[in-house]
Image 1 (spheres, rainbow, N blue to C red):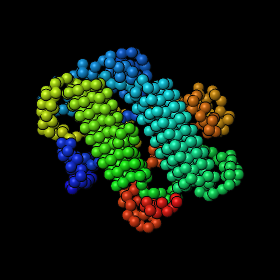
Image 2: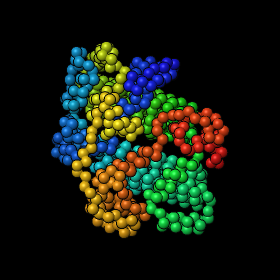
Image 3: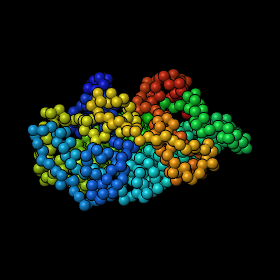
Image 4: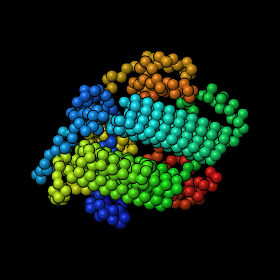
Amino acid sequence: MEVRHCSISGKAFTITDQDIQFYEKMGVPLPTLCPEERARRRLTYRNERKLYWAECNITKQRGLSMFPEDKGYTLYEPKYWYSDAWDARDYCQAYDFNVPFFEQFASLEKRVPHIMREVVADTLENCDYCNNCGYMKDCYLITCADYNEKCLYGNNVFHCFDSVDVQDTRNCELCYECIDCTQCHTCVYTLHSDNCNTCYFCTDCIGCRDCFGCSNLRNKKYCFNNEQLTKEVYEQKLKVLLATHTLPQLAQFFTTFKQNLSYKCTRQIQCENCTGDMLSYSRDLSHCYNCHRADNLTYCADLFAGDGENYNCMDINIGGMGIQNCYEGVCIGLNTADTAFCAQLYDGSSNVWYSQFCLRGTEHAFGCYGLNKAQYCILNKQYSKEEYYTLRDQIIAHMKRTGEWGEFFPPGMSPFAYNETIAQEYYPLTREEALARGYTWREEDKKDYQPQTYVIPEAIADVPESITKEILACEVTGKNYRIQPAELQFYKKMGLPIPRKHPDQRHKERMALRNPRRLYDRECGQCGAPISTTYAPDRPEQILCETCYQALVF
C-alpha cells in the first residue's frame, strides 16, 4: 500500500496492493491524481446535453451537434460519419519524436471529421434531437439511452416507453420525474423503486401499487404516508389531496418528508464484497457507482449490464456490456478489451490506447481518432504488425521522457468546455475553479432570451393545443423552452400540469436529488455499527446498516 498526494487537489489518496498489481499488469505507472480528479478529467470528454445547430460539411444537412461551429471542426452528420464513404486514415500523420505526443494527437484530432451527434444513426427513427443513443423511436432530448420509444427529457434511459423527465430508469412506462427506477408503470416523482405501479411521491419501494408518499415498503397496496388504508379511503384521500394542492407543492412536501426517513447505507442488490452505491449482481467492486453485472472493478461508474460481464477494469466511466481489462476511459462499451486512456470506443475494439471515437472492431491502435474497422495504426497511419509494435514501444519510451505516459488526455485538449460536460454534473466547479485546473469554460449566450407572454392555465384540462406554438420562459433561469406535441399528450394522459421550468433546470434538480459519488464513514443510526455510505455525516436522514434496514422493511 502506498499513500500519495494528488498533484491537483493536494489531497492524500491511497493506492492499495491490489491497485499496484493492476497497474503492473497494464504496464502503466502509479497515478499522480486522486480518484476524484481522475474522474473529473475523464468526464470532460463527455458532452451529453449541450447541443448546437451546425451543418454537415458534406451533405450540407443542418442539425444538432455536440460541437459548436465556432470550434472549427469538420462535421459530418451521423449516417455519413458511420458510412464507408470516407476513411479516417486519409488524415494520418507520421510520428515526430521532437514533439510531445499530446500535441501531435491534438493536431490529428482537429483535422479528422467529427460526428455531429454520438448516435447509432441507422437505428433511430424520429430522434433527431437525441444524443449518445441508439435503437429508439419518437424520442426527444434524451441522452445516454437505448431501446426507448416516445420518451422525452431523460438521461440513462433504457427499454422505456412513453415517459418524461426520468433519470436512470429501466423497463418503465408512463413514468414522470422518476429516478433510479426499474419496471415501474404509471409512477410520478418516485425514487429508487422497482416493480411499482401507480405510485406517487414514493422512495425505496418494491412491488407496491397505489401508494402515495411512502418509503421502504414491500408489496403493499393503498398506503398513504406508509399508513395502510382501504381502497375506498385511499382513493378518496388521494382525490382530495390532488384537488387542493399543486404538483410543485406536493413535490416540496415530498422533499421535507424524505429528510425524516431511514435509508439503507448503500443500495446494492445481490452483491458480494462491494463498496459504492447503486450496484447489482456484482462482486469485488471498490468505490463503484451505478454498475451492474460486474466483477473486480475499481473506481468505475455507470457500467451497464448486457450480454457480457464487465470484468477487471479501473477508472472507467460510462459503457459496459462485456468490457474487460480496461483502464482510464470514458464511454467504453460493447465487448471492448485491453484498452487504456480512451474516449468513445465501441463495438468490440481491443488493444487500443490513447485514442478517441474508434469503432467496429478497431484493434491494435495507438493515438488514433475516428478509425473504423482498422488495425495496426498510429496517429491514423497504417503500419504492418511488426512496424506497429516497434514504433509503439518507441513512442511509449518517448512519452515516459516527456512525462505523458500514464496520464489521460489533458483537460485543455477536450473539445468541450468543462460546463458543457457531465463532469460539471458529478463534480461541479465554478468558472474560476475550472480555469485554475486547466479546463476551459463556455459562457451561455443569454441575449436571445425572450420574456414569456403566455399565461399557462393551472389545470391541464384547460391547456389548448396551441400551447405548443408558444414560447415559455423558465421561472428559475429565464431560459426559453417550448412544449412538444407528444409532451402535451403525455401531460393530458397523466393529468399533469405544464412544467414551469426549462428542461435543463428540471434535469439539474433531478441530479441534485442523487447522492454524491463519494463514500463517508458513519455509524448505523440504530445499532451504531460502522458503515460506509454516500450520505454525508451532516445529512438529517437516519442511515442504517444492512441488518437494521432489513428489519425495518420486512
